[in-house]
Length: 315
Image (cartoon, rainbow, N blue to C red; front, side, top):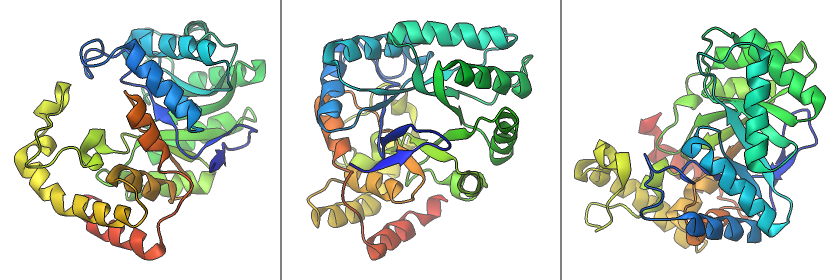
């Protein structure tokens, strides 16, 4: 199993994780309609069976339901599971105590004493400020309730500042979670990727399959229809899917050489970047198993170059 050790720690995670935004989220993903707790329980077990035991959640996902489900599933399997969750810096959360209280609530829902990674969900300052926020996170590392600290959606400059503030407490910045896929490559040109590499920060790539666009499920002539808010996205419209079709054909062609799907090729391309851990979602066991198929093989240099060129216009 390919693994990555998070900066300055002994936390080693698979080179691919599972994002659990959809677990318990009825507003965007339709939890409770098209899929249920039993469905995502099967996804959890399939991921564990495939060796993918790293799960990313957040207190805001399903208003805590994602964490509660993960906590329940972990108790059922009794196997080592690595958890990343997130703190949302709401404007009325003032002072260090707000971080401690939010973490306490997350740990209760997850039914654990500590988590491997605790991230700031968005770089909002409001009234607390980054100095107080990073100091509070460093306190929790010292107390052992979190093993590593991460941020999410931070620009290059914001990431540098967080890294600097944590370093003053002797705590490394381990992760910056960013939207990153073959169809969303802004971090390659806005300084985030270069800065992360220079600081030794790992990129957790959320939406690495562009919410399903890179799976091959949605084509101009397919009967599959996106659910929830994705129905409103022009990317899922006929024109958007027609523009995407030649690129999907390339992924299918390359994937056929390895008996892999376009989704697995897309994820493998991200893993091959070196300091990137994709965290695709998985609502079903089949999706979790398919995600795991991105591990333990590699695209050639020429194949990576061909994919890079085909998707370069999205940089």
